Length: 115
Length: 113
Image (cartoon, rainbow over all chains, first blue to last red; front, side, top):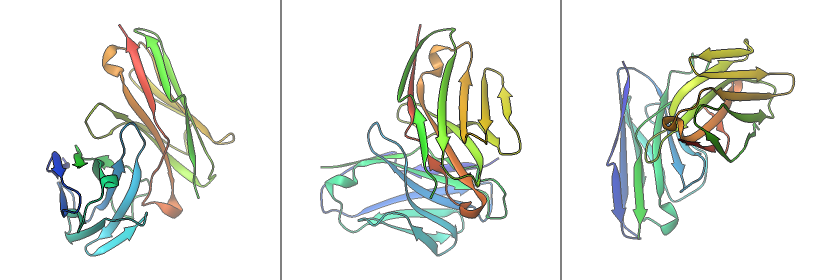
């Protein structure tokens, strides 16, 4: 069966510090990968998605970047955090583009607080 | 592009009653409609989904209906239990943008014991 991991689970960082959040998927190959952000009490905002190694699409211009160095690894980064980067960051995966339906499965999330 | 609207934003029901959450979508090419349950501090969990070639799908106490003509779909929870309390999100996607799910804004369901 497939599992998705995210770490760290929680993170408190000062404004201006760098960020690196990691997501890994087990039990599948060549998945589509996604990063979402969820503000407190709000919906899900798609930040980035990737259909393969080194292939990243950005949905929203922002202070963040994403990378996919390995097939089942997805990293969210920032060089300098802003207060507005606080939120709950969720990674998700789905089967390859050959799938007819986009069933997405979410990880446990990382709660980021920027002070 | 696709837009998904979800209602109500909050819903409070007595334990044992039914709960219904409704979503409408704008893109007639959408063909896949999942529902997610998110408990506090956790990632969303896929609880049920429906594809455009069927009108209804049921899994124990939860069911989803789809009206393609009206472009709306609904989640029905019967015999609600306190553990059903959570935020529920609907979403839609289509073949042309198969990488993306467009989410509704969420419904906070409270089941009162």
